[in-house]
Image 1 (cartoon, rainbow, N blue to C red):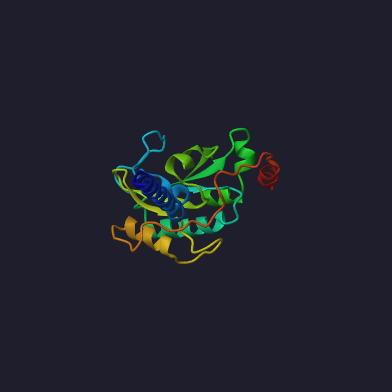
Image 2: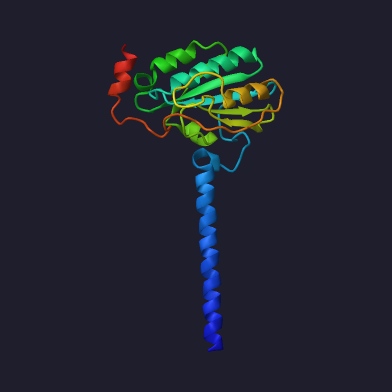
Length: 208
């Protein structure tokens, strides 16, 4: 009887521990989600992107066919206009390896090329976005010259919304050397993991 009671108690303890562990895991997944689960905040060692050693480096990852990318570009243009050359900025557009030009060169790409102080690049099959832990169009990363992450997230107040918002204000504060109220914000954009199997949409837009 005593031995059976001990086994029952031990079994209950193990069961409760297992449930508790599962709840912690689920809670963490729901709280952080997506790219926010990435453990390292340092500049990736395997990237070919050059980290500026004299000023902050700003990276944006974008989907060329996402309608919300336009708003992200508008806010990025505003940030760079107010930063007055104090940040090195680059944007990387998701691009399929097979037909990069036809699929990627949308209006959003061309709008980006017209933003002063912004370098525009392909991100073949989303490799760089994955390396930096970005999974939504319009995601921004800001690093200091030592490669430490200062900010991650979006710089729009909602899907397709332009105007002053928490992410943009935080980004500008960091570029100017101030301490913002937040260092991470939600991102409102399409998944960077989506590339059409057929490039008809990209080809049609590129030809306009």
